[in-house]
Amino acid sequence: MKIVTSPAEMQSIALDLRQQGRTVGLVPTMGWFHEGHLSLMRKAKDVADSVITSLFVNPIQFGPSEDLDNYPYDLERDKALAAATGVDFLYAPEKDSMYTDAFSTTVHVEGVSEGLCGDARPGHFDGVTTVVAKLFNQTLPHFAVFGQKDFQQLAVIRQMVRDLDFPIEIIAHPIVRESSGLAMSSRNTYLKDEDQDAALSLSRGIANAKELAADRSATVEKIKQSVQQDIEKHQACEVEYIEIVNATSLAVCDNIDSESVILLAVKINNSIRLIDNSFLLASS
Ligand code: PAF
Image (cartoon, rainbow, N blue to C red):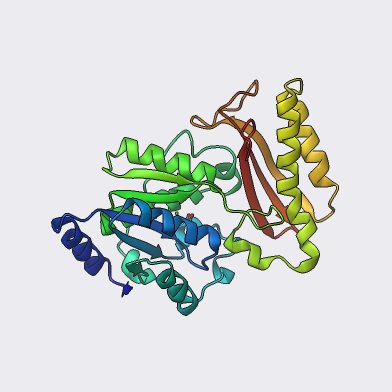
């Protein structure tokens, strides 16, 4: 596995790969790899001839009171994990090479970036779309694989790709869970043993919502209330949002159908922000 740190070198490698007729798959990440990331890399290997994993803790997608300074980072650890998964290029640009002092462009997607995490984290999706557009131009992928855990992020990126005509197929990969049901996330590393039960309230809430939805008599409001009550039984939990939305438009659902997705964001101990989601009528 080759390590690349310069955007210009990355773009020249990507151009060479394309000229050789190889397809390129990109897995954009902020590092601190877990099985969820590794499954995205394996998916990229299945669909593309060469796989690039980018590792960049993107400062412009963090708000002033968020965890940028503490975000877990260990390049040597991540190098070993990516290499063992068969990644061809680990692209880890320096912050200054991504954002020079003269940098002054923002990619902003309207509509699907509003509400949910867009409300809770002002400016977050502008940071995401701006860096992902840069990563697309630097790595020139045919395919880019994103995890479904960041459900709204995926919708925002799909919208950007359609609107800006990026010739890239976006592949969504299902959430990978711990055996406990907890959705894998780099931020799980902040959880102490005593936080585990509170953290599990998200996946338990989703299981409860799916049971209620399967029954077909429960309304959207009743499902949301029931999940909220369950989660708030844990003193450590503060619900940021619970919404049931259409998977494509992210518009709030009046009724449950096969496109309805429940999305949750919960803060544990006022600091660790966890998100989770699931189609309500799906079996897994
Ligand atoms: O999902 C993430 O890890 C980040 O938001 C992404 C897509 C790598 C952009 O920084």
